[in-house]
Image (cartoon, rainbow, N blue to C red; front, side):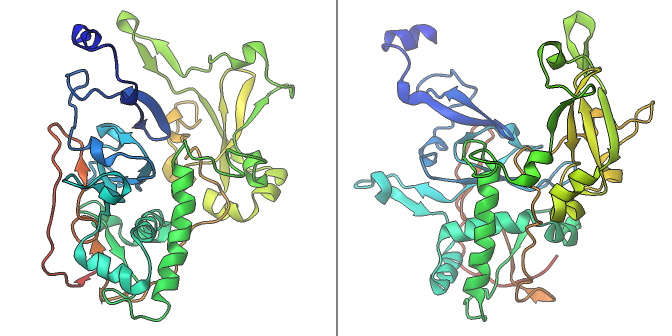
Length: 368
């Protein structure tokens, strides 16, 4: 393989691409179209990965708890989500004579979904970000917890299918605006003012603050990771450990800064120790999970390491709760994410295949 690449004159510079390896962990990948340098080339997948195209990363039937979708703007890894990631793009690239550049890109929509958006005067990006906002809404996840474990999510749409309900366009547009904020937070390559760019939002300044037990700035040995987070096992393998995690109540200063975010964050927070002196102060539990459900006690009464993960770029300002949508009870406009809204999705299992589902008839179905 190396000989083939060198005989050809070396690697193709265009083959170096961004690769969503794990959540919030984008890396560089060399994608080779002609050899087996990678496990599989996924030739049918690559044309749809282009600048400006976003992908919703989700799962049809989770093996454990259902996870809200991720958003990526690059090629994604199969293991982005448990049991295999399914990536649903906003737009698709069409091959054919005369199809090149932006003209070769079309909205990844079923016919009924396209007609619905046309009546509202909105586009595929608005629908995409509305879907993202709905699936990240805590009230939606709680109300549909059982169904989300069984099949593709069903998406509430105001005024479906003709868009004639009062304020349908405004409701969907408002939801899409929240979805766009979420999409930026979920993509580590996207600068977010107040989070990764410029002055931080005040509430973020109080979260995961580097601190020391003696009150000085961290330096030198303070960065040593010696609080039992891992050890060498048989054959030199590194085995995970429980580390040192201390659960506590928020201080008055932290409560004052966090303000309206506290009901979402819960009543207690964590200090995560690197060693006997240095730690991250005030690391809230994962969003949407109460502290009692998120933590397990180790033998010494402290929470285990698995209880301390948090969404790295989520801004703890306000819960992005979706407004009540028309048709929310009884037979309503909750439509399956796959096939009924977005026509095609890339299931990144070798060999990859582009699945096309032509919808000839679409009816509203009961919530479930």
